[in-house]
Amino acid sequence: MAKTTRRQASLTGNIRHLVIILGDQLDQESSALEGFDPLQDLVWMAEVAEESTHVWSAKQRIAVFLSAMRHFADHLRGQGLPMHYTRLDDADNLGTLALEIDRAIKQVKPAGLVLTAPGDWRVLQSIRAIAAQHQLPLELRDDTHFFSTVRDFAAHAKDRKQLRLEYWYRELRHKNGILMEGSKPVGGQWNFDADNRESFGKAGPQNVPPPTRFEPDVTTQEVIALVNTRFASHPGTLVSFGWPVTRIQALQALQTFIAERLPLFGQYEDAIWAGEAWLYHSHLSSALNLKLLNAREVVQAAEDAWRAGHAPLAAVEGFVRQILGWREFVRGVYWTQMPDYIDRNALNAQGDLPAWYWTGETEMACLKDAIGQTLEHGYAHHIQRLMVTGLYALLLGVKPQAVHAWYLSVYVDAVEWVELPNTLGMSQFADGGLMASKPYVATGKYIQRMSNHCKGCKYDPAQSTGDNACPYTTLYWDFLIRHEVLLKKNPRMAMQLKNLARLDLPARVAIESQATAHRNAQL
Image (cartoon, rainbow, N blue to C red; front, side, top):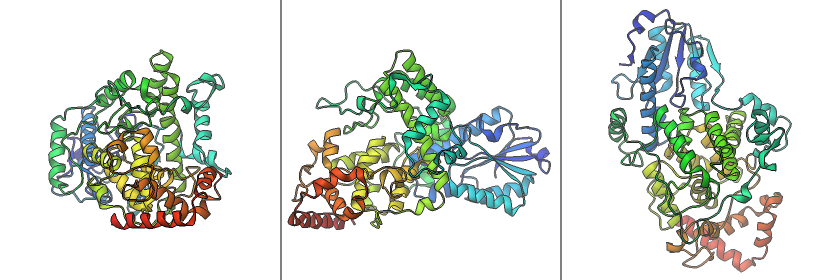
């Protein structure tokens, strides 16, 4: 049965608020807990199978959520908050959030429900439906974890012909006084990309600090055993599990990133190296998205590091832009564009996702490495996602909803509000340019420039046809051919289409033939 604190019996029938805490809202400063009265209110949390099966979630992702939820519930109990908690392995677990909330309402008869705005449209609609069914008021509170509200973004977006990250980012920099000198950005410019994004060169990464990983405690070990049993057929492995699942661990991970990785973060933020999963990235996104860390404290820590002379401005600005800029931007896009956003398919891509995305069994070295580490750790950095796994799916012509389901399944930081716009908009261009000003397409030469994968790969990124042709290069030219009419409307694609125009008819036919053969071979 659902486990509750001793006080529940006296509260039953006299509860003011059933305070719903979802699995990605693990913050004691959450707006849902503001004004909480342990004599009148009751916290509700539940682990349910639906949240691991509505997409075929990988073991690492399931374990992160379940372990973090159990640790957070223990923390709240220790603070004296009465708790109604259902575990996944409870015999009477009904399997969905809606059914578990329904059961709790019938048991404890609250006067109303309180909820911090969820990160998933599907979940919000489900909870609203349950509240309406029981004719209970649902108080939906802003998620104060973010720098902005959805209302702020909607006001920013109103009457704009195009939505662009840069303008929203500058607005938030001004409003919050981050990396500013009065009304001007520190360093005299908003963006330091020109100083970032180098490759490692032939020598590869040198003296990269080890990642901050945490040995599973008893609670996490119990979760790992449960996931390995209950979700044995799901992808991935938990052998290497070491993600932060408590507030204390998340703070330690933040401090270590600032001290050891931030100084070189910008310089190598787009670089890839075979067998090197962690490099100079923060690995904080899962803790941020679970709300174990607050976005404000993460940004403040980075800015403090620059002001103390510990990290260069280019690195700090690049990191801050990911959180203050991109993270807030994709959230605004998600909540102002749903529910139809998830169905968009501007390029009419209809292909299936290759089965080897779930195993990593492919001869393409870059994909084998990126997918292999994804299944092992539940993690890949942003360029691996955008310009390796995402780029290949885009060029191949995979239906964007299938790509979305894969990304939501395999990454420990995947919550739909952040994953969906990044996948459909930025990666797959399925929204037709709402988020990104052009499709992010490139030949295998990009991967060759930013990594060492091509050196050991059977494919040659300089070749678009023939036995050794790189599939990325073949599919890149095929993509331009297939979408030439549409892409001509985009001025940012002018140079790429100018290069396409240099291909004569026999060359085009050969590329299309090889692309078709490759595409068929992946089914």
